[in-house]
Length: 246
Image (cartoon, rainbow, N blue to C red; front, top):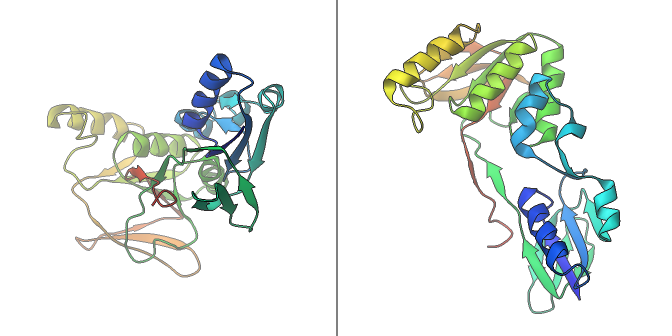
């Protein structure tokens, strides 16, 4: 039987590990991954940004794993439709793949704040290795970065960029950092610790727009402040990637 898996992330990898352990010869497996690479641990992207790890260090399933389990990896191919009656999936390039069983493991998408300028060059999210590569490239040129979002991921991005020599500002909508995990007192102490690293923290701040011509040059706040920047990192959360399933 033919098993098609849409998504080459951590959930897809884990379910295949379980399948191969319990019933290794039940399916011929084809995996479609939108990224042009093997399965890796997204949780460890922050150490890659900080220079503490390389991509090879965070790979979960290397090329040998796909070969050993006879998995066909269709990397860099995005599925855009599912024909449940005919049991077919179709890629953005028009290729068609039949299946007997289908697993949809499309994961989550980063939230993009719907403000003017959000699509400018130099505005990135913090979700995959391409985002990390974009941040590292920007950091190599020095300059300033604004991280929108004072949750755990945003603070990790800010720390990594600061460690690479960028001047960094964190803009957070709520009065204290990491308000979902910390009470106001602990949030205040965290802010002091972040500021001790040379990172500016702007709380109770709403982003009005991202400004620039061909690429980003600043972030305008509702209160009239303008933060000059060469890079904007949006780290305001994720939502389930249900587009294909719908």
